[in-house]
Picture (cartoon, helix red, strand yellow):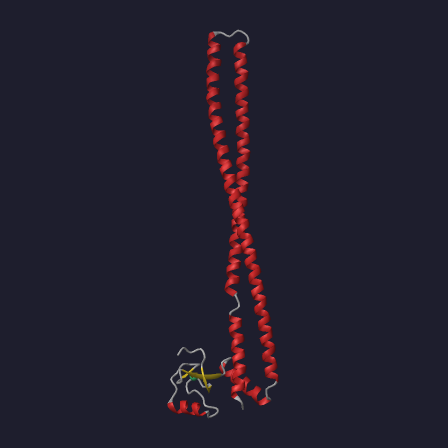
Length: 241
Ligand SMILES: [Zn+2]
């Protein structure tokens, strides 16, 4: 039996496994989290906008109160010059007028302050909204990139599966049966190779000298006494020399 041919099949299968592992799951997770964040920010912004609308309504009320005070003052001013008032009445009116003027001043200040505040908040909100839109766009392009990458990977996997299938179809029945049996026992890594010339590449054990020489002589069917895999006389490419 040509074990080296079957080793080629193993390598394809290992490549497939690695490819499947490279599936950008982590990125998908990150993207999902990012979306969550963005939606939360959006909700926050909506709450702030609602507050701002409430604030605007308050400002309107304040302005109406202020207009009312102004009307009261002008009415009182004209009543000051209409009709006869006793000095005591005049004093009362003047006293009330002063009170109203003070109130008006306070209302004006309050209005100005609230207006300035609302203006700042509106500006801040606009900036945050713009930034959010930018981040949303960024997120969307990342999703597109991710989907494209995933699509490429799925296509590569499909091609590799086809290759493996074709390869398996060409095998002898006995080879297929042998490979399946070994796979059942050892997983995708059916064969071991030599690591640094003396270790089993699968379980990393230092091979006994008899095993080692049998492998190097190419005696078929030599197995690792530790993990039981058949060892082929090839160097493990992944080992760093
Ligand atoms: Zn081993």
